[in-house]
Image 1 (cartoon, rainbow, N blue to C red):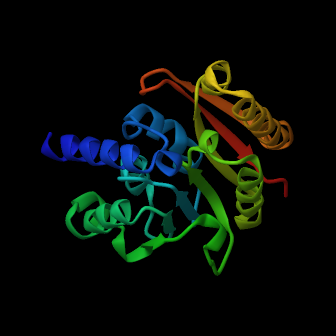
Image 2 (image 1 turned 30 degrees about the vertical axis):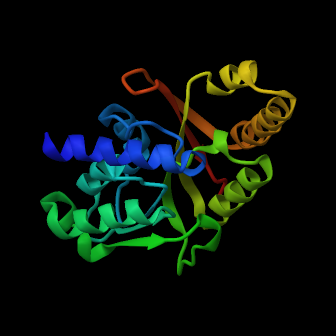
Length: 214
């Protein structure tokens, strides 16, 4: 319980300080974590997994339970406070420590991440609704460069958040959200093979699963 409360307090503190890059008031629920991890859960053999924007590790906690001895796990997080939290988890938490020898936390933007081989799975927690459309397009371009042929990208978005934000935004805000919708729908239309509805989360969310064509 102490860890749970501490995680939520730290997440809310970072939300207040850095709303644009944090984007949520609380860590993801275990139900959302399960939905994001579902494609990786059923991988048959050796796999490389990348988590982008893990925050304090709410989804990471689910992922580390699924990692096999031959897997590789990389985490990319821009927020230095969250990076510190994650590094301590891999040092002190038994579940995280079990996979520490095949895991690494990288403090950088995903556009600056350097890798030595493609990934079969990417799990993303970035708050796209807070980003400029051009940045979102660049990030998705990076994702599909990072993915191996047939690789899967899983990310979430809060249900009906863009229409709600459009309703209370000024003209510039509405135009930005409209362009963002176009970017996301372009990738979803080409690559989505599944969408999960997660109601037990704050706020409720959709999990989008996209596959890179072979």
